[in-house]
Image (cartoon, rainbow, N blue to C red; front, side, top):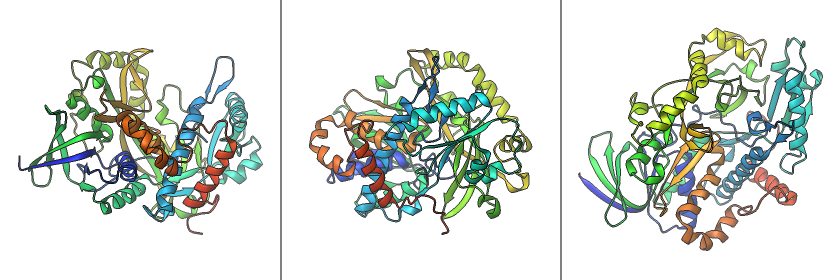
Amino acid sequence: MNRQTKTDVILIGAGIMSATLGSLLKELAPDWDITVLERRAKAGEESSNEWNNAGTGHSSLCELNYTVEQADGSIDISKAVKVNEEFQVSKQFWSYLVNHNRIRNPRDFIVPVPHMSFVQGAPDVRFLKKRFEALSAHPLFPEMEFSDDPEQLKEWIPLMMEDRTLNNPIAATKMGSGTDVNFGALTRMMFNHLQSQNVDLKFNHNVDNIKRTSDGLWELKVRNVENGTTESHTAKFVFIGGGGGSLHLLQKSGIPEGKGIGGFPISGIFMVCRKPEVVAQHRAKVYGKAAVGAPPMSVPHLDTRVIDNQESLFFGPFAGFSPKFLKFGSMFDLITSVKPHNLVNMLASGVKSVSLVTYLVKQLMLTKEQRMEELRQFAPNAKSEDWELIVAGQRVQIIKETAAGKGTLQFGTEVISAADGSIAALLGASPGASTAVSVMLEVMEKCFPQHIQAWEPKIKEMIPSYGESLQGNPELVQDIYTSTARSLGLMTGQRINE
């Protein structure tokens, strides 16, 4: 081992989560030494990369799976409210970074794009109307609009209404305050600032092992993938934010909190259209309902995306399967994640997930033309020659024992931390990046409880709603909407090339 380095904090993975935690800690404890270890050559190359996710600023404005119809016919909006509040927290912190010149040009990472839900058939129209009534009565969703009038829908979504056969009832809801977020660009902006603050960002460095030392520190064996040399890095606190790669490192840490947890990888495929005359006809992120048996991350949606100041349309995601836990990972990732302590959960999950596996097999066998037929449910006139396939990032869903029994497949993100707060890992997937600030505040509350009281005034300066619920505070909601829209340049309805 050629080199030994000691630091206060190590962040594994240069994605949006580590960028967020590093940025928060640099504001709260500027004298702490922070090292970031990234196996790729650049920041934001895996799950955070703009081509590896849908870029939806997940705020529950359009995601139908966040609002569940109960047995009595009522709509449970609790998850929608939670996710929306978390996105407001993210917007507040990003606004602070812009206002204090930590990052510049917010237009390069966030733009206004309406968020819409679209359904077909009388039962789903009834559901959408009830969902609209439940959400629009809440202070976080007062501007939501509903329409089942085809003429109104032609104004909202002309590409989707062109030559549509109207033999079924259709309806949509619209929120003009939705956004498209380039999480790759945001990640790189945050790391550029952190490097200017003497954060040591090491690219092409892979963490091969992690263990506890006798004096309570964490020692990481790190390999330079360019020249093969190895280094030893020790730290008081380690955050494992390596996307799908986090599970293996959590297992290597040996902390009891990580026992029993497994992971199941699901990849995504999007269809992309860059043809200007087609792109110009659609300005929204429009979410539909998932097929029966499909995982929540496979809800179909037709999205305006803005990447490098260029607009395109994404449709998908279609599910795929690879045993890799990272897009640039190993074909042995899945099999090597199976350990004696999680074997029962992995086997139980296999039994429970027959419908999911069936769904994945069917998805893998789809031809491009079959995918085009699904797209035509959204855009009836879509032409195959205008669309291409791209493979998105890998998502590793958590498998664990829950109240529902052993081997439960979880959809969402979860922080796993040691009892003493010296190490934490982030596992799971969507809505991940959109809620990064809330998730990293949770990490800090779990892992640095002794500092939170002293940090609280600064946290409230960065995030005015910290510690408060927005549900019963419409004045605070309005203040946040107004101030973040001003700071982030979110003037609704403006196209990128205007």
